[in-house]
Image (cartoon, rainbow, N blue to C red):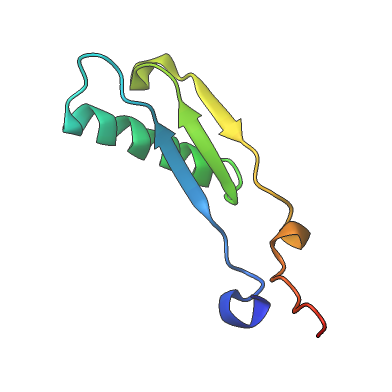
Length: 77
């Protein structure tokens, strides 16, 4: 909620899919590169890196609008 997170809170994510030949380190490197791409390009986004880090093949994954994240209202009795 706004009271907990405040107006200035941002969420940035980096996503990498497991690829043939990956090691834990290469998977983390791709996810980390995707995270930094999210932060450098406006924050409040998730970025998927397809392929090796050098490919630069970043894709933004859209978030739901903030209004969609309102807590559910109780059902009247």
